[in-house]
Amino acid sequence: MGSEGVMEFGHIRRMTDTRFPYEVAVILPGEYFVSREPKVVYTVLGSCISVCLRDPLAGVGGMNHFMLAAPSSDNALDRWVDTGRYGSFAMEMLMNEIFKRGGRKDRLEAKVFGGGKIYDGTIDIGAKNAAWALDFLEQEGISPLKADVGDLCPRKVYYFTDSGKVLLKKLDRVVANAIAQEEGQYREKLQRAPAQSDVTLF
Image (cartoon, rainbow, N blue to C red; front, side, top):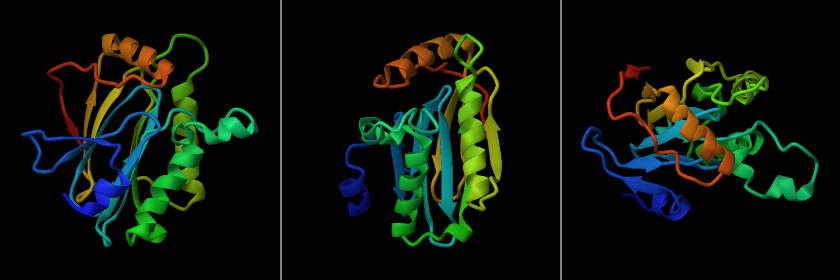
């Protein structure tokens, strides 16, 4: 493991998985991970969004996981507490880390996942998150290569930083209920997932 990842992303949990040739970095809501070394970035999304960004020429890629598009108020505390959970901050942090490692905005490839409607009620938080993410990328002049957002299901995402490929598993409603509860608490790890599921390669 290079010193880059240890020093700057030391808080991110790492694990090995015999299915993958690289170390897996597990990100939770409000977190992100970037690397020049080949890694797999893994997360589970309910109404949250993950944007995967990669500069194929610089060989650097990363992914974030945010819960809401932007702070709900101009309150200074709201802007500084857990800022990574907001897309407006999460995207800036992800892009800046890629640029620090030699990436360039005009070469970025993007993929967007998540935004499921896992909560009961009329307010679709996931749809708002997805719309915000896609609008942000459009404003930045970045056209997503793939966007798998919306629907009623949560998603399990594995992003390969070297190739830009994504393995995606859609989870069932039983898992959605558990994830909705955990997202609401902002602190529990999103680990509920069926042992077997179809895999789609993007």
